[in-house]
View: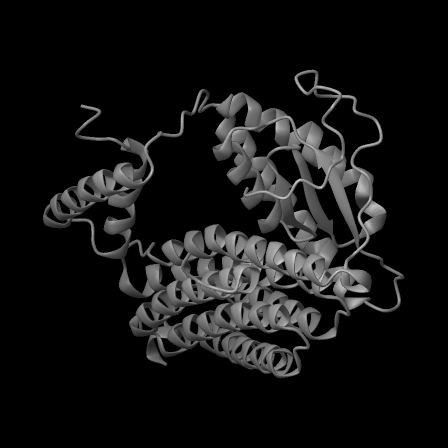
Amino acid sequence: MSATILIIALAYAQVALALAGVLLGLRILWGPRAQDRVLALDALYVAIMLLLLVTGMRLGTAFFFEAATVIAIMGFVTSVALAKFLSRGEVIE
Amino acid sequence: MTRLFPHPVLSLFLILLWLMLTRFSLGYLLLGTVLSLVAGWAYSALHSPRPRVRRWDVMPRLAWTLFSDIVWSNLTVARLLLTEGRSGRKSAFLRVRLNITNPNALALLAIILTATPGTAWVEYGSDSGILTVHIFNGAEAGHYRHIICDIYEPMLMEIFE
Amino acid sequence: MTALADVPLALAIPIAALVVLGSTLTLIGATGVLRLQSFYDRLHAPTLATSWGTGAIIIASALLFTFIDGRAVVHEFVIGAFIVLTTPVTLMMLGRAALERDRAEGGKAMPEMPEPDPSPDHGPDRGPDRGPNHGRSET
């Protein structure tokens, strides 16, 4: 019983997060401006990180947690560098 | 003591982070302590003045206000997004003159405002003291001005100034 | 799947509810990023995913692995704290970058700015000469 509830909820979460990723991907493709793409990319990082966490829960393994941590850190560094680039035209001043 | 622990709060936080990421054991505690000490020295070489927190007892009240604010604005913004196009919502910029000048207080305010759905910190002119915030629902401008000026600003003043 | 079957019902229901809540909020935020018309509006949508979207899923994950591993698993909260602390930095920098770009282009791209507080009811420490100049400086 509890396994059924959890599997349904986790499967729903996987579909919802994957769909969120697709929507954000469309925004990255459409733009129209660079800051829109960077914003969507930052949100995409978060969605993928959550998808990994949920997948790890569904498989009952903590393995995906490490990947989620790395993605969270990479997402932050990437987005800050891109935002810096957008406002100044160069990353390192 | 100050030379050994230039940033005690930062070092404690790093030890805790280290233990959370690994395992609570004596070996990891020792390793984490050494690492956090090195990180503290490195940080003080980068950024000399230590943030001075005058009153720690206001912190829980701030955290609780922030928590309830985030829950409430999550619901509001989710509802606005679902009814987008039908509700006649119009976003707006809000400019507020701030009295706090402490960089740490400003950084905390920036995190608070941006982490809460519905408000986004856009710009702050340190020479004019004017903060520009973008708010998702322009009809709520008075409400957000009240939240910034009358709730968060006095609390941050108590903590840092 | 054996691990999930052992979870008691009283724990399974809150975990399922939190997972559904978190993923739904993330999805709503993503539709906002896609559907909203202006960049400054879209700036608000991801905060749904990064506040309670992340929060709910992380609490659910911590609960589940605490039960499965039989000890307190709290390292999920490291990700949570990290996301909560770093997303504002990203969004703030993006907002400022967008404003600077709009300002540099000028004209119709520049959003309308209202005057700051009409009633300077507070701020005795600020002289009257501090007018609403558009001082652009580092925060």
